[in-house]
Length: 335
Image 1 (cartoon, rainbow, N blue to C red):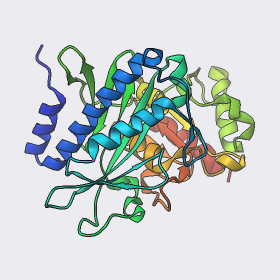
Image 2 (cartoon, rainbow, N blue to C red):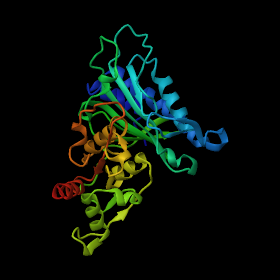
Image 3 (cartoon, helix red, strand yellow):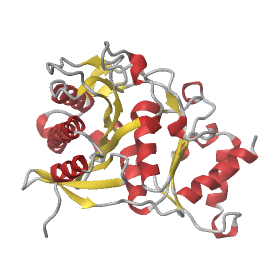
Image 4 (cartoon, helix red, strand yellow):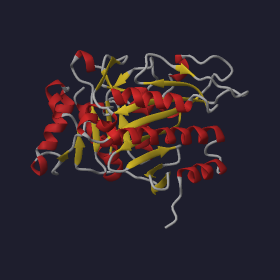
């Protein structure tokens, strides 16, 4: 069977004017750099890249060796393409302008979480890379952090790479969601999941139940009603899944439906939310919407939030459209 490669897919999108040549180069470069990350992940202890790096990121989280390795590879690969004016990462304090040797200004800004699900690295559970591309609206001047503070609906491209039993790239350029599997023998990405769609209904939720005592009353009530099963007000039996890797949890619901929840709660450290708006919530929220789902922070559509700073946190509730509407009703009723 002849399958479409990522390069062929992007060239076709360029011909259809969905993207331009610099964006095509950016996505291809990013995908290729993630092949190197996938190779490092597959080596694990053999390459002495497991365990803590001995440093902390801007959020005060202990960095793993693979966090730093992935961040460095993404920075190095995208620094000289001429497509990217500056990059921002969950692992860095501020933005990094590129050494753009091109005579024309770079059109795009790249944001990424280089290795999502770091707590799973040492136990060989799926982890991933999340990325978001914004237009550089200030191409004729020096890029600043302010240029990155765009609402999620202004994203130009977004996606993630999941390093699991297969390495897969899931991408949107605003024309639906498409999944590519890394063919290690051929050395390229093959389109294996065209036009991914999230079922509108589900009976599966993903949430960290250990935080239950900290949730607000609406989330408490919704989860209790899920656990009540067919005899409860929701009148169906639910399954719970939790991998502690947003990439892996979202990949599952993109494949078979479900909801993923990391709501804000009463603890001082997470009263605004746990996940980062720019590096996690926006790209994942856009992917979910492009696949027919919904993404809210508890009160608003995630993609309508205007960021105030690079490392802003938000509550995240996303997935199957009808179930998100049900959760939103619980939240509204609690006010």
